[in-house]
Image (cartoon, rainbow, N blue to C red; front, side, top):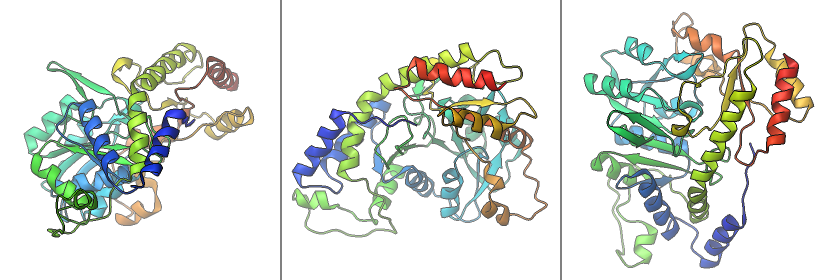
Amino acid sequence: MDVTMGPEEIDAVSAVLRSGWLSMGPETLRFEEEFARFLGVPSALAVANGTVALHLAYLALGLGPGDEVLCPALTFVATANAILYTGARPVLVDVAGPHDLNMSPEDASRKLTSRTRAVLVVHYAGYPCAMDHFCALAREHRLHLIEDVAHAPGGRHRSVEGAKMLGTLGDAGCFSFFANKNMTTGEGGLVVARDLDSAAKARRARSHGMTTLTWDRHRGHSFTYDVTGLGYNYRLDEIRAALGLVQLQKLPAANAQRRELTRRYREKLQDPPGLILPFTAHPLEDSACHLFPVVLPAGADRAGLMAALAEKGIQTSIHYPPIHRFSYYQELWPPDFDHGLPQTEDLTARLVTLPLFPTMTGDQQDAVVAAVRGFF
C-alpha cells in the first residue's frame, strides 16, 4: 500500500478547517452528489466507514433475526460481521475456483434455504462477480442483492444490456474508503440504494433516526427535530468528505494505472511453474484492479516466499484468512458443521497478494517480479 496525498488534498482539508464547520455539512453533500453522478444513480449516502455502509444496507432492506444471507467465505470479516449486527446469519459460500476468486454462483444456489433473504457479493480484488447469474438468482428466489464494492470503485459489469457501474446492479451497493482502497478518505464509506424507501431508511438511521440534521438547522430549514426510529452515529465528517471529492477526481486515472501495472505483471509472471494468476479471463478495462493476488503451486512455501520478498524490502499480504477459520465464527456453529468450502480451503492456504499501487514505478515492479521468479 502506498497512500499518496498531494497539494489538492491538503488544500481541500485546509479549506474545511478555515470554514469552521467540521461535522457533516456542505462538503459531505457535495461528495454525495458527485459520487452519485459518477455512478449514474439518483443519490448516495456518505457514512463513517465501509462496515457502516453494509450495516445500513442490511437494515434498510429489513434483514433481521431468523434470516440467512449468502456471502463469500473469502472476504474481509466486516462483510459477515455486519450481517450479524442485524441478528441475521451469514451462510458462507465457496469461491468459483483458482482462476476466479469471486463467489461461486453454483455453490450459492446449493446453499439456498427457506430462510435465505439476501445474497451479498464482493467484487474481490476489483473484478466483477458473475452478476448475470446472481441477478437471476435473486429474481428467481425473490432475494435482496447487495454489492460490497470496497475493492471496486469505478469497476463495471458488462452484459447484453451494456456496461453498468459496480454498486448499481443490486438493491444496494456499499463502498469503503479505508486507507488502502483505490480512493481513500482515511476512514469513510458510502451506500447507494435502488429503492427510494430503502434509501430514506438508511439516511434516517445514519444520524440517530433524526428527521433533520445540524446542518439543516444551521441553514434555517428547521429549529427542531423528531426521532422516528432507532438510529446510529454513522455520519461522515467534512474533512473526510473534502478528501473524498479530490480522490474521486483522481480515481479514473489511478484505476487506469492499476490496470496497466496488472497487465505488466501478467506478462512478466508467466514463467514460474504452477503459479496461477487469477482473473486473467476478466477484461481489465472493467476492473478496478485493487489487488494483484497470486495462487502458489500446491506445496509451495508461502511463508518462505513472503519472507524472501520482505528481505528485499517488498511487502506482501494475504487477502484473506477465510471467515470460517476465525475463532469467533467457529464458535457460532457446531464443530461438525460442514461449511462445504473445498475451493476456499485449498486456495486460501496458497494465496499471496503482491504490491500494486498507482504510483508504483516500473523498476519497483521489476524488483517484485525478479524476487518472485528468483524464489521459484
